[in-house]
Length: 308
Ligand SMILES: Cc1cc2nc3c(=O)[nH]c(=O)nc-3n(C[C@H](O)[C@H](O)[C@H](O)COP(=O)(O)O)c2cc1C
Image (cartoon, rainbow, N blue to C red; front, side, top):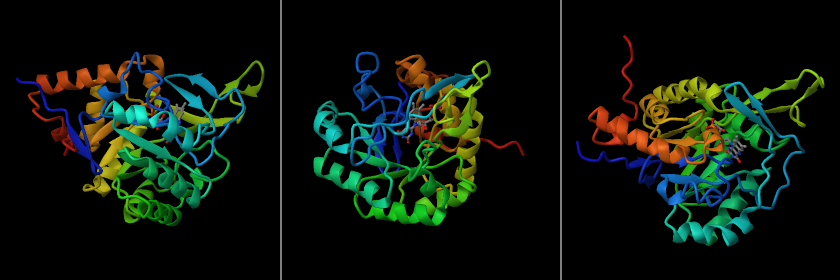
């Protein structure tokens, strides 16, 4: 068989392959350049950006768990101005598909980040983080309330003609209701999932391992939950493009998410363990396509055969 076609279209974006770096685990796109050049990926989702720089949560803010990790970074970031000035020009020059992950403490702040990026140019699209469990105000509320989420999405939709993705909260009481709300507000695609709320305790010190007590769980431990959520939303809204993530470590994991309904995938925690993981996943995906006589990786999306 000839080389399989790995290109996919998702939520208004054409990607050379379906493997993207997940927000918060690949810096601003160039941090792991020597081990994982960003132009070889389907795209890079930046660390969440706010209008002004943000210091984040007190230490310790990362804890290792069985099959995963907990984080409570608190959305530390350099601010949208610094990103547009210092990093974006290099990414654009190198032909990287850049998706800016956006968050704010208010709808106006989300909109301000998008408006600033629009003046910079070269950005492929946006992903709204309405699902971060580590901030005391803002993100969480939008992701849990369908009416608020629809309003926020519409406000951001009005600020850009570029593809707009909304990253859903796995902690929301009704996942499908929030998915519908984001689409009603004008989302082109939905990313799922963000981290799942959890905690870890040091039994000898009798203290939580994270300074903020609670954090977000990621890594292989969350994969079956993420897969279920992708498939649930795909069943409810089959026409809506989905970007699947949560615990992906191998090419076969990526295939699993695509079969469940995802058009593309993102890889987060696995990059911490091995910074070149995404390059390996792309190779493994191509190998799977060759082995199964799949000409186009895009044909995997939603191709799950249910057991009747
Ligand atoms: C240290 C860390 C920082 C993160 N920061 C963000 C962020 O800024 N915005 C966001 O939408 N998601 C953020 N996430 C969530 C990831 O993008 C991803 O949704 C989650 O970790 C599940 O994927 P994984 O199991 O492959 O890591 C972060 C995750 C980690 C581990």
